[in-house]
Image (cartoon, rainbow, N blue to C red; front, side, top):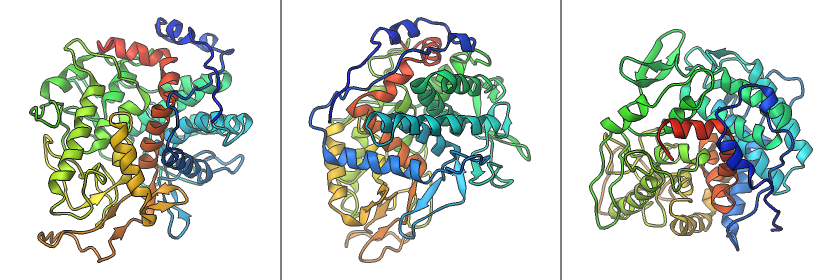
Length: 454
């Protein structure tokens, strides 16, 4: 792959010193980012999965000009019967936006094609219904309206969406960056915050109001960075401090050092914030490094799979990574590793994205695992690895909660958030491109500084 020069090397440092972008006149107009691969001899399995994942986001999006839902991307796609589901996920849109610059830099689409898709999608987002700046989680793929009256106004999915919007906006600059900034500045993080307990709410709907709050460490770390860096509706470091205070840690073992536990141990909770924000070489005031924390969680996941392989045929050091995904009995967010701070579901299901999303934390182990997955033709589709598979139990163990055929269970779908986390981590491993772009955006630096992460 032909390498390109990385321009404007001094720009990220200059931007990092800015307090915030207060108006459109502050938007950088004349700096075009170009990636440079940092890994020599990139394994084909990485590029294959990256390209196939991008194809999912790009090809399945609503590309009808003048549609009120232009640029929206389905939550999932059935690769066996070749059809997209009728509802979009705003998290899918966030990941899809972030991958447009990747595709341009890798010459999978032209600059003009990428610009048109990003520009049109951001215009769509500005026109969609919002509640205090936050978006409904699922939207109708044709109309852009709330998919049903049970769909919540989601803080975490809005966070993923704005991450992607800012990345794509920063890449194309000009009108795109201005629109992304306007979307971000309209988000009222302080409205979605319970100041009585110093926690963000977990969900909101007009019918039920606010429900639940974020407690211990999980994927809401990105929310805290975005909220702390907001120039319009900031939330200070209090929820970050409370999160750490109430989070429990694992014990140190010969296989991994101690790390902060999440409720289910689902690996996405250790990955999602890191897809957009580079926590390498950064520690907070207590000396916590969240990147190292995820390295240890990844090591624990591999070790746990080895521990369980005598029970489940799917598990091994080359088939691991328990995270929210489809399973034989439907989608669940309860798949996870142990140790964890709560409870989780273990039934032999393995989603490839669980390992792929940890690529930056354990590259050698993840690449070997991906090669193992690729050797199983049942796991591959036109949009890369399917969401999950399960080979059942071993002869000396019975799990009455599942009924797996002798040939194994293989999912029919790919899911946007699972394709997204894998794809972004692959690009970050190869080039660091997503991290480079967010490092050029003052909001992230302001947010990290406000939380004491430096």
